[in-house]
Length: 190
Image 1: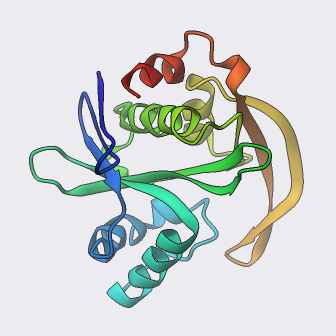
Image 2 (image 1 turned 30 degrees about the horizontal axis):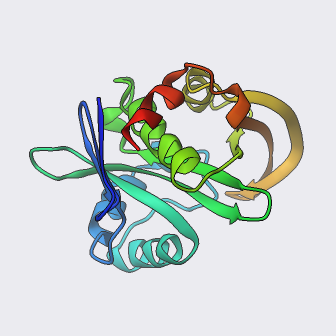
């Protein structure tokens, strides 16, 4: 189940509400990025105050088309998911996501990511979506593979965070690969 409201660019999935990040979302981001397990594979240091979260939010608002993942009843932010580096000439964008650790393992990220990717392929008319993940981030790899992404390469020492270089896996999802997978099924809402 996916419902899309084009006026607000909000989406309702079976278990959550997705809406574009807003200028008032710094506290929600702090709740997510203050968890060391969330920032383990991230070029972002674990956040400790609202000013740091505001800087992250300002960056997202300027450079990303990122959605807040909200519990439908409480409207508590549990994660974010979005597209960035949109190249309109090649119809290509990159994809990223994060979620508070107490919500891991429930399939919520696959649900949200499927909706956001359907939005990208439908509304933004994307042809290709790229995603990078740390070499040993098995949870992220599972999410990407469940959505139909295929690994294309290992990029050696491609990223640098927390004082070390890291190898990254490059995944991609092409429009022609969607078939009747979860992203294609979600596109019916657009």
